[in-house]
Image (cartoon, rainbow, N blue to C red; front, side, top):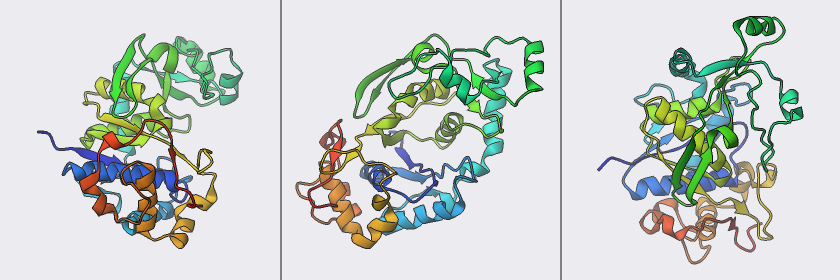
Length: 314
């Protein structure tokens, strides 16, 4: 049986918040309950927005919570650096492969132009790219390059991707009508998250991806890109989002819920116990260490819908 390889891949644009902690805890428990290998990858594609100091704080917070990893971040591993900002050359190899196969094209549309266009807008505000630059001639491309830099998009086929999520069940998405041609390299030359995450998961042999349900919409394109690059897509498990006791969804904007504040208010066991109870892993929100949850962990205990923190948490 193939070894389970999971990962936690935070973006260090600030201090970890409670949603990050839940994702780290559940992904770690899933891997450890299956005697698998756990990776900590730092998704700092834009180092100006994601300083190394925050990445170091993430490691410190994970150690404080009692979560360990087998490869990644400052520990390193067999695939070189696990900081995305240091893997540009690797992404370039796969980007060039797709370019040579004719999948890529330059896009000169500004963000303002995209949102002002009559292209379809999804319920979450995302715009389906209308293909404005898809069929530009070489002459048109050369002329536009004189005026502004170009992002690079990938042509998606008229194809529906179906998959079964570990918690959300059967899902499908039409790449052409619900996703559209998406960016693989920004106009400033920085490779896009969609390319980097697929290359990293593929090269690192990740078999299980645990992340928030708000990222479910990017799964189909990543599965397609995995296959296009010759990788086997991982099993995706999109976990519920956290609500406060009044049902209000928590987010990074809730500054009082970042680890800098929470570590002053709770012990690791208290914080872990509250999250374990919210996730249905324990019958009460009593303090519990992360390692004590390994033997009782099961994805069957988690609901697909949102989770509520216990009364009195705030």
